Length: 195
Image (cartoon, rainbow, N blue to C red; front, side, top):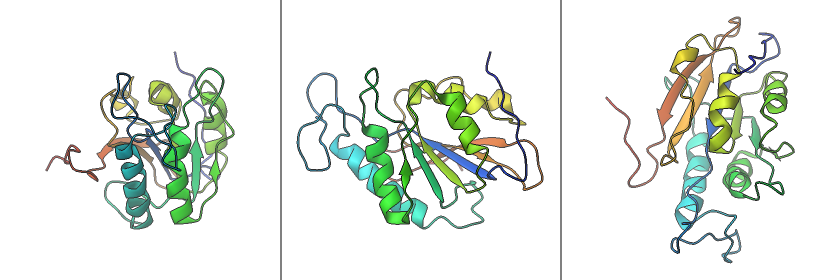
């Protein structure tokens, strides 16, 4: 059972967006992971993952304040911290190009497994927030927010999807969020939004 963290409408953001890192290297050869210097790194993104990070940076920089999807230009960016158990830098590698483009410092002080801590941190800062988290813990993280349509939140982020944004949005006085899943549709081969 997930503990739901209470929300203070005066302190919490009206929009919280959650994304998985960009595409990763194959476990069996190509594509390989590369770091931001172009050197082989199994804990970093694939070329397509770096392309997604750049496309996300441009997309979020242009996000209008009234987009019907709930996507907003983030003023705060949080990313999973690598640890001895989870060495992936992919969340940070995805978040940093977005942060540079938006001139927002990426906070990567919290590791996977500390979902309650990151949730509490989010709910104490009113800025529109982007969270780049490990997809294996995303369902647990999101379901811990007060959500009016909580039954619509998937228990697990789909393993094959790198092109989603899970959005929590609410009116300023509302004590609960509304959940929506948005298709990014940024790269060739991404699933296009349904009409």
